[in-house]
Each structure stands twice: as structure tokens, then as C-alpha cells.
Amino acid sequence: MAGFFEIQLGVLASFCGIAMIFERYSLKTGSENRTAGRNDEDEIHLGGLSKASDSLAMRYLGIYAIVMGSDWLQGPYVYSLYREQYRFTERQVAILFVTGFIAAGTSGPFVGVWADQHGRKKLCRIFCLTYAGSCLVIQQPFFPLLLVGRLLGGISTAILFSVFESWLVAAYQGLPAALAFSSTAPGVKDAISKALSRTMGHASLVNGIVAAVAGIVANWIVEQTSGFRGPFMLSGALLVLTFFIIGTQWDENYGTGASSGTVAVAGGELTKLKQAIGLVRREPAYLVLGFTQTCFEGSMYLFVFLWVPSLQEAGGTSLPLGYIFSAFMISMMLGSIVYTTIVATATVPETTALPANGHTNGHSNHRNPVHDTLVVLHAKLAALICGFAALLFAYSASGETLSIERRFWAFCAFEACVGMYYPVMGMLRGSLVPNEVRATLSSLFRVPLNIFVTCALLTGVSSARHMVFAGCSMLLAVASLACAFVLIKRSEEFVTPQAGENGERTPNYTD
Image 1 (cartoon, rainbow, N blue to C red):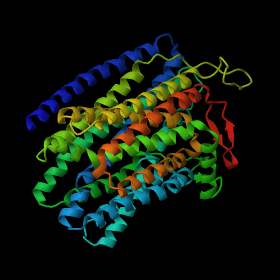
Image 2 (cartoon, rainbow, N blue to C red; image 1 turned 180 degrees about the vertical axis):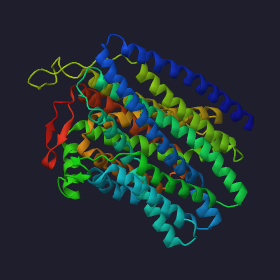
Image 3 (tube, rainbow, N blue to C red; image 1 turned 60 degrees about the vertical axis):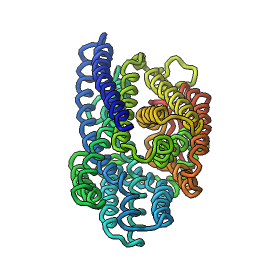
């Protein structure tokens, strides 16, 4: 059986290499098509914007790679450290894991508020310290101290999967002002949207690469030290290094008006949270975004707990889990490459000017077609991804007679969906959610996600994995329908609102 997985890993790696070559060609062709027909002044503006966006992408992706690498170093050995080296009971290990999810869920909304009000860069640096702190306290087999570590880890997770993305989106949207030319210049919005989507797609690709590398490095450290503490020590060191790199490489941005480091705070944390909740209550698109995130990422977290026993059920316990994990990561990389290729080859019109009065409506021909077309494209991709993932989970739940080969390929296909999902949802949040509450809403969306995963873990998912797969399939199907019938329609007529008092929608007609 090991030979089968080695062969499949080679096949996936070959496909990934071919796909990367095709992606490079698509990006080059798309760039040439977009520059055709522009005058020299436009080319000067867009050339400067292209260089600035490439520089921003490099600064973000380099730090993102280190951060995600530090996270992946810990992932494979948390359970083994608690259970095998520290000899805690299954119940104690479950308490530790649930504590982390509860901490992430309860701290999430406030983490987003703090980031929007006090600075996303500052919160990203705090993440480095809190996550490094969790790596430090996990070195001691003292249960109360480990609970503190899980609390720090949960808070860190809430920051990692909301604030970093919010910083990136705001940084891209601030490029025209930083370069001292108008964001309404021809092609500027198109260039920024394309560059942002490309960076998010590359972030998903980078995530897959560093996951595979981190798994190999962590495995080597464990073999050399004959214990599971080593990967956490390396992870903590990388996080401390990242703290200083962010301090020198990133500029600060906020969810509210800021000047020279002074933040114009609209109110306290509860006021900001109330504004975000008001926006979700009044705008169906936000509700669908949150529901889709809960369903897809909740299913993904449960898949992490279930893929090993599911494959062992069909193929025995002596499986080459390292090869299988690497195959999953390459599949995720393939998904991200497919995403960036789709966006690069998508045909979208150039930005058109608004009427003289600056107003528009859902049926106006003067709407921003580039922004709307990209949003609709990503809404359709979200519906397709959730629908395909639903079919894969339904297939995986079809019965114990399903062969290990078919289960393996179904799981690889789901990982490809994961590789597409993150940049798609990141672009939707970046396009639809107003900057004033972007980090707050991103964190707020993770509250039901953590509740969902915590409840599932407490009920014992491993003993009823076929039912769990079936349940995830139904939830993803509902999410797909919600994206198809609500998100796509709202995306076609959406104008990004600004967060007024109590969350009233104040349309921003300049977008």
C-alpha cells in the first residue's frame, strides 16, 4: 500500500509542476492583454502601481510563510506531546483542545475590534508574542500551565486568521494614496483587485509549500531529539523573529481614520462590535459569508480529526501518513494554482467613470464593472467550491465498503477545494466588507465556527465519522445554495457600505 501512495504523490507533484508553468503563462498573457490600448500616462501610473503591489506582496508573503510555517511545525505533534510524552488521559487532552477553541471563539470579536481601532500591524506583532508564549509554556507537563498555553494559542489563532488578511486588504487599497495618484484613474481599481486576488492565491500556495516543508523539518527534529518538544521550540523562535520583521517591514493601518499613528476611535469596543453586528443583521451578504465560513471551515477542522481513522478503516493502521499528508498539501497547492489561473484568465472590462453627481444604483450602467465582475466571479466560485465539497463528503460517507484508493482521492479533491476556498473568501471579504470593521467582522465570523467545532468534538466525532461526513455534506450544500441564490445576487448590486452608528448602511458611492 505504501507503493500506491508514493506513486500518487509523484503524480500529484507532476501535475502541480505543470499547473505552475501554465499559471505563469496565464499571468503573463493576462498582463499583456490588460496593458493593450492604454496611453503613456496610464502606463506610468500602472507601472508604478505594479511595482508597489509586487513589493507589498513580497513583504506580506515572506512574513506569512514564516508565520504559517511556525503554525504547521506545531500541528502534527500537539496531540502526541500531550498524550504520549506527558501521559495525560484522553479526557484531559480533549479539555485542552476544547479550551483552545473556546478561547478563539470568545476572544475573536474583541480581537477584531482592537485591530480595527488600535492597528492591525500592532495586533499581528502581539500575535507573535502570544503564540511564542504558548510554545514556551507547553514545554512543561503541568496541566494548569498547559491550559494557559491553550488560551494563548486560541487568542493567537483568532488573530492569525482575521487580522493578517485585514492588514493585507487595507494595504492594497491604500496603494494609490501612497503613490500620490487618484484611485479613479483608468485601470487602477482593476489592477489593485487583480493584484490582491493574485497575492491571496499565492498565499494559499505558500501555505501548502511551508506545510510540507514544516512537516519534514518537524519530523527530523523529533527523530533527533527523541521527543515532541523540539518543533515547538523552533516555532517559538520563528515567531520572535517575525515580531521584529513585521516591525521593520510593515506599515500600520486601521479600520477607522488614522493620522500619524493617532487613531480616531469611533467608540468603545462594545460600540464597534455593535456596529459590526448591525451590518450583519442588515446585509444578507454578510450573513451568508459568515454561514459559509462556519460550514466550510468547520467541515475542514473536523476532516483534520477524521481523515486518519477513515483511511485506516479501509487500509489498516500501517499507512504512510507522511506521504499522505504531503499529497494533501500538494492538492491544496493545486487548488490555489487553479484559482489564480481562473482569475488571471477571466475577462473583465476596464473601470468606467461615475456620473457627475457621483450617485449610482443597482441598475445603472455607470456602476464599477470591474469591481462588480470580480466580486460576482468570486461569489460563483464560492458556490461551486461548497457544492463540490458537499459532493465529496457525501461520497466519503457512502459506506465502509469504499476502497482506500477512492477515499484518498476524494480527500485530495477536498484539499484542492481548501486551496481555492481561502483566496476566494478572502477576496469576498476584502471586496464586500467595509474597512472600518473588516477585522471585527472577520473575527466575528469565527465565533459560530468555533462553537460548531467545539460541540462536534465534545460529542465524539471519531466514533460516528460517517454521520459527520454526511452532516458536513448537508451543511456545505446549504452554504452552496446560499451563495448561489443570495451572495451572487447581492454581489451584482452591492455597493460597499460604511459602518454608521448602530450599523446602519451608508452606501459608499466612491467605490
